[in-house]
Image 1 (cartoon, rainbow, N blue to C red):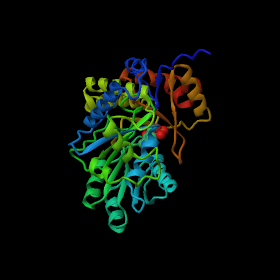
Image 2: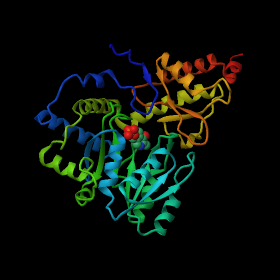
Image 3: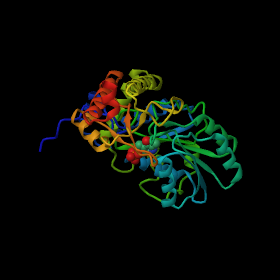
Length: 376
Ligand SMILES: *Cc1c(COP(=O)(O)O)cnc(C)c1O
């Protein structure tokens, strides 16, 4: 069977549209114990630490798997078995950390707010003051459920003042939204290959304070997900403990070279912000409403309210847009019907302008009234 033609654009938060150069980097095989692969791993780790302006405190621990593997590994490694995690929840990824705590048997407490509301640092401070058993706090930088940008700096400050450790799921923000370890106190930052760094999916990584990590030996319930063991072995031999995703790593390395050429995080942020503005303006001009106000919207993924029209259904919109080369993402909100459009990946403003046209045309073809009427 021949593979179907690649869809032109993935308007999703990962896997996402990658550059031809990144895909080309997967054209050779690597032996995982070869010197050149060891050097590639070391170079990758160095580049990842540069993205967060590591002040020399943190080390990079790569891990096989999707982003959730890295989150689970970080919680299991960093939160001691007699520790307790405060999880800041305003969407599906916060809830996923709660589930991880339940599975691992780590004590936790949730601080929940609505999906369209940012985490409140004062409420975090109060929760920490009320419960001295809490050792760690887990926060989601950009909650991909909606695209909401949580106030990480302010949260980090109250966590530090309370003498606790902060673990950040920066999966959908890493490389795009600013997160600088020389400015904010953060024990660990978790992210993965296939999001804003524009690599292909298949590996995660956790940037961890080295002193804390070395003190965490024996915490993990899992062999494969033990980041302390992974790090000790990596430091000793330069090698991954178990078969590394060689092609994924090579692609991520090449994606990071392009990230640096583009101008690093500020440039990536600027490109995504332009993508986001283009999409919002085009869709907004035809009456499509969003879940989040501008002040909370990270330029990562945009959640639109589905038109209230019997002619609308997501599956039809999805299928028709896909036929035209654009892959959408379903909504994930529990309360209202939505659809999401990602503006990350190897995409530029003119791509988002065309994507908006395709979506609007498709809604029109479906007979969604607000579009038919805005046409007339
Ligand atoms: C994508 C994502 C993850 C990880 O999801 P996987 O499907 O396991 O890659 C975790 N947290 C956030 C905020 C994400 O956007």
